[in-house]
Amino acid sequence: MLLAVCTTTEAKEEARTIARAAVEAGLAACVHMEEITSLYMWDGKVNEGGEVRLTMKTAAEAYPALEALIQRLHSYDLPAVYAFEVVKGSPAYMEWVREQVPVRE
Image (cartoon, rainbow, N blue to C red):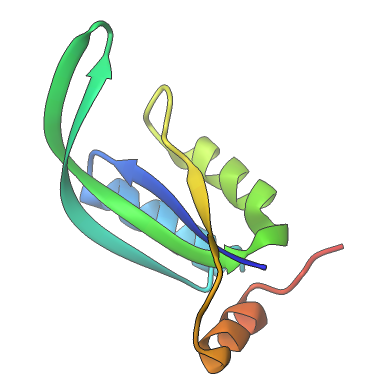
């Protein structure tokens, strides 16, 4: 099974650091980085601000290590880390992701 793992960061440089580390470690085949606006509750008040969303394509077996890497490199007290199962995709692309993120025993 393949996953699209998401997180957000406040700074573009932090997003690049996490994305590069994930790809170099073989935990993500590729990472999309998009500038977004987030509205959220924190410390009892509503906040709004710019963030960078990372979407990382990976194998489900790599999720625990990928989440640990994100948690280690992330500056937020409580970073959002969540995944969506990729239920459909072009066979060639899905195979490429699998080749980039080998299953580790």
